[in-house]
Amino acid sequence: PLILSNHALTMAAKSYKKLSLKEFDQRKDVKDRRYSLHLFMQEKRQQGFETLGNAVKSDYQLNFSQYAKKYHPMAKDYNNAELDDFFNAKQVHVQEIQMLGIIRSHLARVVELYLILDRALFLQEQGFQVDVCETFDMAISPRNISLFARPNDVAMPLKKNI
Image 1 (tube, rainbow, N blue to C red):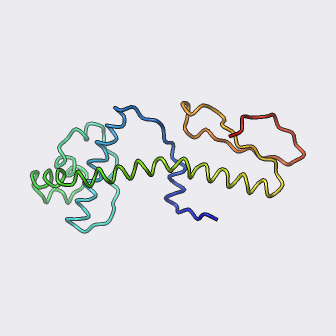
Image 2 (cartoon, rainbow, N blue to C red):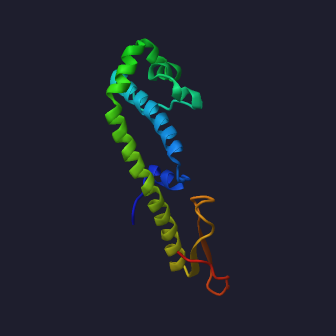
Image 3 (cartoon, rainbow, N blue to C red):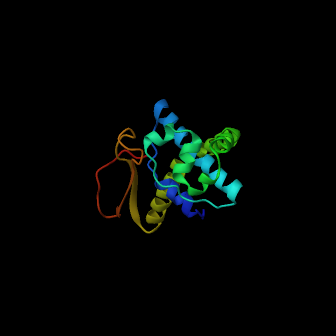
């Protein structure tokens, strides 16, 4: 058996969708600031991961120093130049983290399908007739796979199996 962490299970349950370039760039801006602030807290204050709360879209147009001071009180102990210099110096590291996140997001679908197929196999081993089907187009929702199980003596209309 493959043992999955809570992080893997959460990842499999997310609703990833295809992004336009504009949406991708917006998410990148969000993560640039959030990841930089987390790195700052970790390096300057030896603090572990803390949630930052929800920002509004316009917050991501701010300089990093303005953003940091708005979302973490300890950032007020540093001047704007120091905060902005940290942000600029850490961009290579932040981009590496984002690339790992992209790889991770692509694995989410694999984990989701593994879970569905594992459940299907379990039900089949318990004597059920099982169908795993694409129930609608991915453009409607990326979470488009359904598992149908019924006792072997119950008929069910044919579906498009994957």
